[in-house]
Each structure stands twice: as structure tokens, then as C-alpha cells.
Figure 1 (cartoon, rainbow, N blue to C red):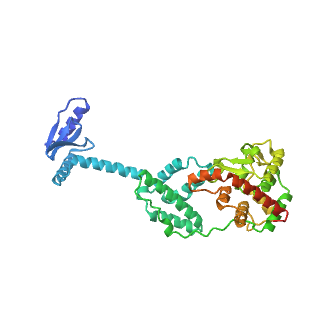
Figure 2 (tube, rainbow, N blue to C red):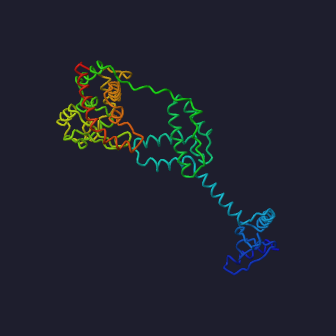
Figure 3 (tube, one colour):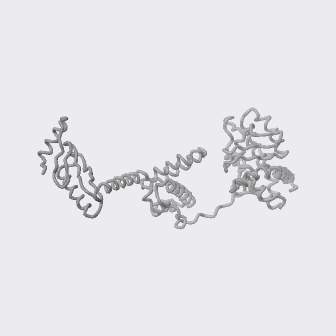
Length: 400
């Protein structure tokens, strides 16, 4: 049997570079080359070896203890080498699980899935993650995440009265967890059934819009008479005819217009649904654009800000103009021009609902049909847009 004194002596020689032979301690335990411990054993009729560690990190006493533990494994029909491999793999898996916190997975989701999204949207999502989600669950390994962990944090958001925000956060957490499942970081989505335990979202309040033709006519006349900057004036005059979204109009560039064919090509990156949109232009719109070109034709933007030719007017600027005209928040908003067109065109019964939806640039879930509709409906939309422009004029003239 080996002694501590002998082991120290053999190890000292090995450190000096001297050749040290293998020394046995009995029961298959050997001190090899004065450096490490190895145990020889038989399993399944085959001779096998397993390394028990390096001296002095593993002492003689520790090596003997490991030998006895291996004897117990062999008595149970367990191969020590295979168990060591399995234990090592499990330790690596656990270490990976500990490293894959919700924070780490969420940031990977952010980098991979939101890379092509608009910068404003990406900042909004990152802010929600860092300021509202990570503080209560960011350090929890995603594989150990439970619905109760998530719900506890969302309850705090609900308690401060932000019910809609709580549901937005739940949706974001659900997307991150779904990403984690797809990547193999966890086996189930801990956020999949959260809605059932959350306070219901309040019913959406319809956006304010004037729907009475006589009052719409008065609004149009008020816009014509309102004293303001050229950009704000013409944006408000053109918007009722086109009923596009405010962002799409405010950031319009002259290069997007095909005047010879009376078409406006809005690029995908500026559309809410990220699909390029073509708007047929009625005669009235072309005339207004030609007037505007006299004033702003020297800039890239149709509606540059008074402060900078490279920055478009803001939504707030348009909204403030409506408020100064006397239209209150509950009565009319900028989005209301879309609501006016959608409501009156549908109520008229003269146009197919699909054509109206295409004109509003609402998303078509069937992508094949969407591509077909964009081409198929263009001529019908030309008719619709001209008819609508004539209806707008009639309302302005008090004949609507």
C-alpha cells in the first residue's frame, strides 16, 4: 500500500523531470508517473480504466474514497466510465441552463428576430425588456421559468393600472419563450396560457372621427381657411382624399410619385404592414401636388418641417392644427380621415369590400392572394379614388 510520504516523494521526482514508474495501492488503484490517479476494473467481461484526478488536488485519501465509491457502482451493475461521461455531460448541460437566463435568450431573440425592424420599434421593445421585464425575471434560467414567475411580475404592472401594457409585456414574453422552445433551450413555453390568469384588456376606444357629411364638409372648409405653414396646410388638404396613414403621407418624397400615370409608390419600409403600396391619384390630388411643388419642389420631402428641409412635419403638428380649429380629442383625430373614408365608402354599397380594404392597405393574410389583389384591384381602385375625391369635394361644397 502507498503512503502519503511515498506519494509526495514520487510527485517531487516527477516535477524535476525524473521518470517515475506506476505504483499500485491495491484494488486496482494506481499512482501513475507520480502525477495522477487511475483505477483499473473489469466490467462486462472487459478490462477498463478510469482517471480519478491529478495529485495533489486529489490526495491519497480522496483517491481511496473514490475507489470505494466505484466498487459500489460496480456492485450495482453501473459502468464507472460511462457514469463519469454522463455526469460530465449533465454538469455541462446544467451550466448551459444556468447561463441561458431569460435575459440572455431575450437579447438573442432581439438580435436575431428584430434586426430588420424599424429603429423606433426596436428601441421600444428593448426598453420594455430592460425596464419592465428583466427586473423581475431576467436572471431566471429559461429552462426553469414557470408561469408563476411571469405572472407575479405582470401582476405588479396590472396593479398600477397599466392593464394594456401588462398584456403587451405578456405577448413579448410569450414570443421570447416561443423562440427559446424553437432553439431547444427549453421544452415548453411558460407564457403560453398567461392570458387566462390576467385582468382582461379594456375594450378598445374607437378613434375619433366625424362621420356626418355636413360636419365633414365644415371640417374641409376649416382646413382650407386655417392659417398655417405650407407643409401642414397641404398635408391636411391632401389627407382626406388619400386616407393613407399619417406617417406614410408626412414622409412622402417627390421621387415616389409617377405623375404621368397618376400613381404614388409608397416603399415597404414606410408601410405598417411592410409591403409596398401603390396609391392611384385622383385629379384633385394631382392638382394639389402640383401647387405644393411650387413651394416645396426644391426639397426631397413633400412636407418638410419649418425647422429643417431634411425632416418631415410631425403628427403632433397636424393634430395641433385640428385642435386650434376647434376640433376636440373626442371629435376628430388624424387617423379619423381613414375612418371617414372606410365608413362612408362601405356604407355607399358601391364598392367591393376587398377593394376598399386594398385601398386602405390593410393586410391580406394570404400572401398569394395579396400579390394578386395588388395587381387586380388597381383599376378598380382608380375608379374608387376618383369617386371618393368627388365625394370629398361635394361634402366641402355642402352637397354631400
